[in-house]
Length: 496
Image (cartoon, rainbow, N blue to C red):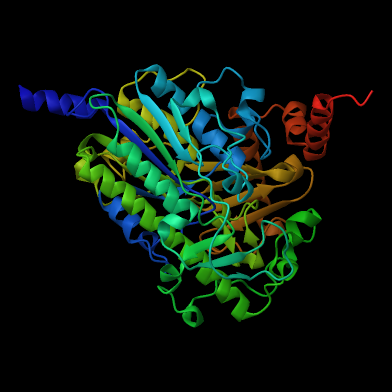
């Protein structure tokens, strides 16, 4: 009888050990799939690899927006950006969908203790880490929220993007002190303290956000020492890679390119790569500390653990750097889910399509909660039970970006359009061109494939919430900035 009960509970997605499993959500910032467990030739991430061994690694997981704020808002509300209308970094979902119930908020309403450490919703990095603030947090989501304040980063600094100034330059800090002197080490320490003091017998939802490898690329020197700079592999891109995008908006062609940033020599490029990988390895070590604390507290066997990045990142692919674009490297994310009682799938890799918006219904089903009717996405439970399940129906992933960028990616094709379809498009044959180097949109031989993909994208965007003029209004950055300035002006006291 006991064995039958366990089988039934597992079939429902519930732990056999407790009616309410815990949740540990670990987020990284601006991390592409540069993890050793994802087959990266240089980057070293032993602790995330360890997590993948006790979970399912989704090798075809994609964000809904290659920018921190909209991506995190989508994941935490369970709504595509066209449904929650968060299409800019400084738009808060409480202004656009004020009554939405976020993922942690739902757990909180169901008796969970919910808490976060550092960046889960959007934060302005590095400014808000220096100040210890989180302007775009959502208080309704948490019983407790801990901000990290790290005003100084001891160690010498090198800017590997000499033409890029300001806070988003590729500044590397070669830390002269230990892990806990820098933001992610501080976040890990606070997360460990929280785990050690959790109330017994009360389920928890704990979000732990790490800000690396977001620039500045900060890590103690020992993490730089893991890499031999001169031997690092520079991502391949044909010299004329962007020439077939000449009919697209200027910002898409020339934004954040190697030339614009001054990253024009192999020495500069490898210095940047070393710093990016060192900051990833530093972040990875902090993940290890949190996982160890969970083990030591005896909580691992009843805790669902999720690791994800908010979006991908360019480090020279297509001669581009950073985020905001719609190529594979910017839209694909590392995504690992460990469910302790679904051990048969531990260590497996799923090649089925998944989206970050799928996380909300997945965790809700695993915990046996009732989701809001409004949420989108699809529970990944079938893939957590069978990573190669043929019953999985998602055959395409959908990502949108600034500038009215929209991209639909299937197993064989990627179709991307800009200006909501008014400002040019791209078509890539992924079977023959997995690097997305040759834009076939203007090739008459592919007219039929172009029309098929364009039609599929426009059907998909309506399905996930596209509202024509309303959506375009929310995506209008100039109007949004003007409105924000007007709102600030109203708050200022009169001089009269």
